[in-house]
Length: 271
Ligand SMILES: [Zn+2]
Ligand SMILES: [Zn+2]
Image (cartoon, rainbow, N blue to C red; front, top):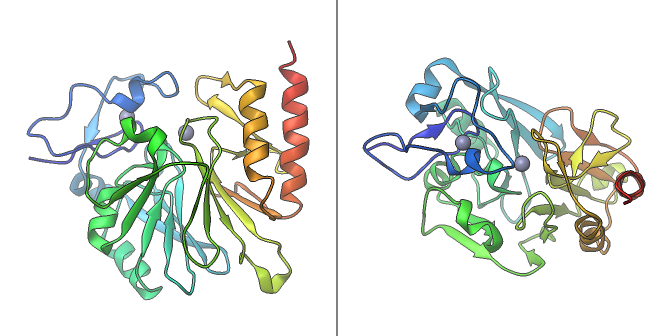
């Protein structure tokens, strides 16, 4: 029995003798099956020709991404906080070097994920570090590997520790979640940060963000979804956004960037 990993989206599945016939996440209209057809790998096989790169995104915020790029090419972030470290989003590859880099910074208390495209090998990570997992209940159907460590939380916010708050924004996925980190770069005068995956995605012009039901298939969201995202983040102070990929951050005036981006988006989709 093996936990097969989809090569296109990086999701690790529950143990089976043979690779699953299809990937549920890639079959969804928000993803796609690659040109060459469905392919699978395993964690052991992935580790033979891939490694992880570690880079500080900010003080107490370590980016962890896989090279050469794998699946959707995201990077996870290890947020180091006095009450315990949180792994925000996840990647498929967990290897010895990665375990050592995390351990130097003091373990992982919990893993929280923005949405199913970043679930990757979350159970593998949680088992290794004896961590709890927080996923929004609205995306329960997309959790492909079951674990008693997963807490499917409900409602619009969930308070963790040290002021960390999960905020359900919806949009790209119904359970789409962002993380508010009030202590981000506080000693540098920051008001706080949002870690967003692609629930609020940082675009090439980093004065702006955007919001889509599907990024690869270019399916936009409607006005109700955009307004809900704005309403859900409104109570939280932040001036930085860390998106789901390397070099995808808005490092100042981020709340205004969300507002101006939403205004532009709503103008563009006006019927
Ligand atoms: Zn897939
Ligand atoms: Zn996504």
